[in-house]
Length: 159
Image 1 (cartoon, helix red, strand yellow):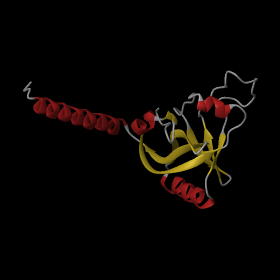
Image 2 (cartoon, rainbow, N blue to C red):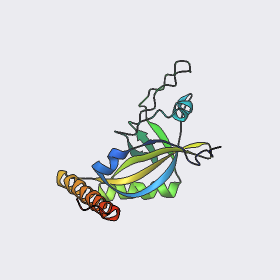
Image 3 (cartoon, rainbow, N blue to C red):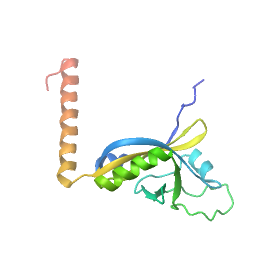
């Protein structure tokens, strides 16, 4: 019998690592309404295009898509509505300071469940330029090629 995953991941924002240089990250609770939790448990969410903003000393998550749960009645929340994130006051103040000073943005990285509660991992990020993206891709390709060569060498092939 397979043991259930301790923190089942609902959604990952893989595009964020390509688009941004990720910095410090935090785990935040997320305020959900109605059948949104059931939709998340069904694994239906997308973090692509999502971001967070500090508004009146609170952090709000914008642009995250949580579709309506198919088994529920009609829910008038909207699939891309803004959702409040739950963090300690000191954490919010630190994030707000860094965003205002450095011109960073806050992006969601991962959406998952922890001890039955929906959590989102947010990170401070700085946008990459086009050449940064190309350089990252070139480094990744060089690493892959080195791994392939090592694997071929260990197998005894000299291609």
